[in-house]
Image (spheres, rainbow, N blue to C red):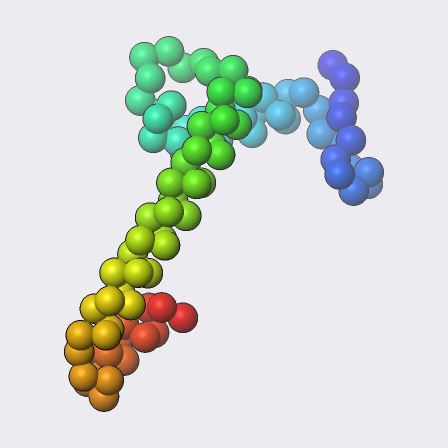
Length: 89
């Protein structure tokens, strides 16, 4: 098995470790976790990971916008406003 250098050059990661990490990552992705076939290519896993992270960012942005709109409709001194402000920070 060959080994690869990490970005720092200080440690090495083996092909087996990469395979294990890609497999673990695949299990975290809803799109790939429920497939009939257990195997997906590393590039497919990485592509789906990027898509999933983008969708999570979008969801966070959307929820933040909704909370901001909700905050604008309630009294600034209310306990609810305090809770919403803490969620936005």
